[in-house]
Image 1: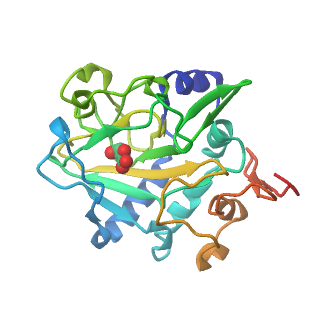
Image 2: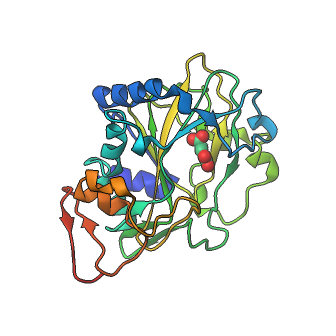
Amino acid sequence: MNDREKFLFDLQGFLKVEGFLSADEVRAFNDAFDANSESRVDDPNHHPEGNTYGPKRRGMFTGMLTWDQPHCQPFRDLLAHPKSIPYLNTLFGRGWKMDHAPFMLTGGRGTEGLVIHGSTSRHFDDAQYYIYRNGQMRCGMIVCQFQLTDVNEGDGGLCVVPGSHKANFPATEQIRRWEQDQQVVYNVPCKAGDLVIFNEATLHGTLPWTAEHERRSLLYRYSPRTLHFAGGTYHVSQPDWVSELTEAQQAVLEPPYIYNRPLINDDGSVERPRRG
Ligand SMILES: O=C(O)CCC(=O)C(=O)O
């Protein structure tokens, strides 16, 4: 993570990394979703309040890590991608782990949004926080959102309130419902292959999708080695198929603990210190 990226993430609570995925990687993800289109469900996270309303339900895909080969492979490779490791090591320290299982958000024109949410800094939330101390940034849960189709200005989809990870007062209901002060809400424009990394403490949500083409946003959520945000997907022991993964990919699926935890170095190698 270079000096520019550190400045921007600290300032804004999010960072766009252009061209993170290659064209071949984007194609492999899109092919996998096309081949598994019957897996699409309505997103159960259904809170399209105020101006985030849209007439169509937001679609979602989950379970990609266990899809048949070859379509599970790009999702497995993304667990500890060589380009994402240095970002996550910088923002968490080594030992970070997957939080919720990955999912993809989708929908065409008229797809509903999601009310703006996020913990900010108005109180200390020990699962969703941002701290800078002694030259280091440290975060609670972080979302890596990989765009698999373009997001042009005004298309909708992911929005953030830049800087709100440091906000001391709650956003008003009108702001959260995108009914007032819309200028503080940024709909991050991206090309297919771009990555947006944001802190769960940063206010964020979804604006209704207005483009003709389909939204396809793939979300990987990570937490520091000490915590797990989401219930329901927590494994105390590793799933059977974990033996098919690399050492680094397996390390990412470990439950939260410190002592003897495998740590992924920036170069992708895994170190096994005898203590935390
Ligand atoms: O649509 C988005 O990218 C935001 C998703 C989100 O905030 C959520 O699913 O909790």
